[in-house]
Image (cartoon, rainbow, N blue to C red; front, side, top):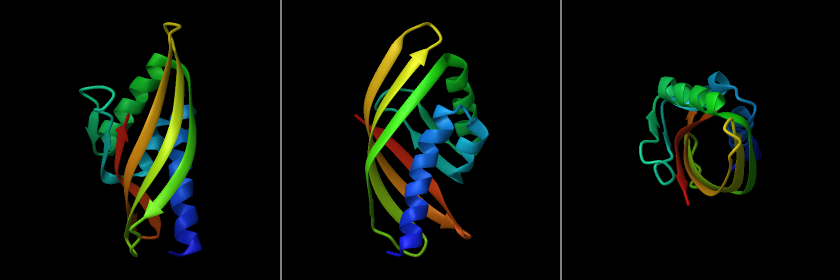
Length: 130
């Protein structure tokens, strides 16, 4: 595994959290492959989104419902690296302050599939587990 690929995948993981936390749905959707999948059904039954447009719309919904959100990402493990694919696992503590005043806290295990498109790594599928 090249150091450049490892760093790019770690940066991709951190950008996932940063773009959600800073409520940038366009940038958030842009780190997914065009046909990328975000699957949060372990937490919310109808939360499976396919494609950048669906992921962007979900990001906009999040931005409309929360005042702030913070992801503390840890233990990012990258495996099965080929020249154009990889898998990874990361753990996170996610806290939100909803516009209603409610606070939500989640312990999340992210199971990721990555794909290299041109010179850039993208998220092919991100599955959230409890």
